Image (cartoon, rainbow, N blue to C red):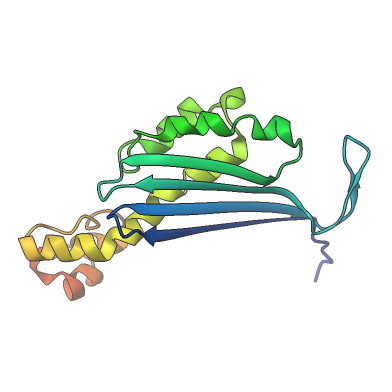
Length: 178
C-alpha cells in the first residue's frame, strides 16, 4: 500500500428545522482545517486542526421553497474582516426560490468578487436538503390528493418503470418495454 499523509479536511453539514410558525430553517456549516501548522500572512501561526474556514448559512423558507430570510456568518475566516465584509451581500438570497433555478442564480449573483466561493458552494447544497425535509409532507399530500409524488422521474431509482416505483407507488408504475 502506498503511504499517504492527510493534508486537508473539509467537513460540511446541513440540518433542517421545522418551525412552529410554519416556516423552515435550513442551516449549513462548512469547516476547513489543515493537518499541519502554517504561518499566516500576518505572521501568526495557525495550528494543525484549527479551522481555516468555519462558516455558516441559515435560510428561512416557506413550504414552497421561497427564501424569506437569510443570514451568513464566519466563525473563522483566513482573512478575518475582509472575508466577513461580504456577509451582508447574502441578503440578496431573500426572494429566491430553492426549487426554481436557485443554483444558477447563486452562481450568477455571487460570482467571483461578488461573493465568497466557499459560502456559495455551501448555499447550493441546501435545495436537496429542503426537498428531503419536505418529502414526508409532500408525498402524503400528493398521495392524499391523487397527484403523482414530486420525486417520481427525478432520478433513476424513481423512474416510472423502476422496482422502487412498482413497490412503493404502484398506481404510477409503468412497465418498461424491452
